[in-house]
Image (cartoon, rainbow, N blue to C red; front, side, top):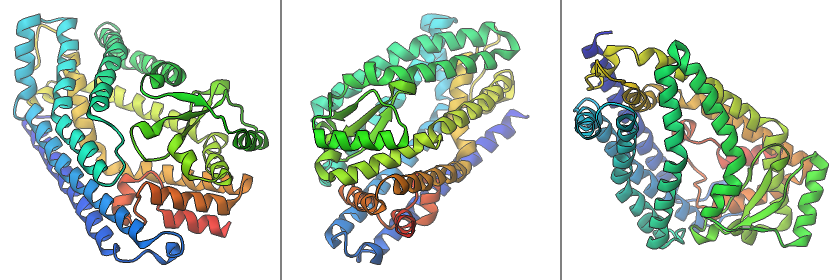
Length: 418
């Protein structure tokens, strides 16, 4: 491909993607605003008008912030690529380090740090203005920056060795390097599933065994009925950072843990907690988690194979504003450019992934209705939507692109019919 044609194609996709994303967001804002005045009939007896309007205002505020972020991200992307930012950064860095592994790792690290610095003001605004305004923020600035530093250090501790291994494989493993890199990446992902809960999560939150014996007995009874083994039931101090509630599983095999946010336990009744957990258990018993991991691995193999081709194409670098080096490795640059370009060319496929995820959610709801009380799950969902200020009236098209869960009305309608 001619480099100039690829530049034009890339610029066209960046612009088209930005326009589509902004159009979807503005549709979403208008749709939510139009339905702000009245609670949908399905929820009229369950959710107060004030709560519905709070959810609408919260959704609109988040989407307006996303509009700003879309423009910033597009500008940063063009600045790094077509306007020569990466080329300048590469030349500057290689002047200090010379070619070699230090330069390659340093280039990727520099791009990551610059991106984080650019995102920081909007992240801070979201936490301490937007979330604060709607009563969800529980963080202090000290905790915010402490978390940021921890994330950076952990990312460096884990990511830099993985990056060194990947770049070494790209350089030394021949034409099939992408296959070996894929095997390493898959192994790393599986390893992290086992290590995250025990080594990383406790650096940010406190996990204590579930103390409520009545609730514990109820949950253990549910797990026995569905044939689910767990290493324990834990409560996480989610209220330290946010008023949002949730529950999740971590680990795999016999080492799986069930974790409840303390905010969730404080709001839901025991029978509702059981129903929510039954939904999550449904994902495991129906093999949704394994299927998602398998799909992720298959897609990543295809993308790495594509990168294996692109990294040897001069037009790929020139078309994205970079002059490849003739006497040194361009592997790090290829990784960066690929990660920049991939979302631009794949965004329009987002609804396909959402369809699969929504299908899984309906199936998990049906599983919960079978092994617990469907009315309890409906009651729990209504409370969670209200407490998290999740809009009951999302724009359908925006939802198709961005939401992994079906709209509340669709989920509840199916549950009530079960």
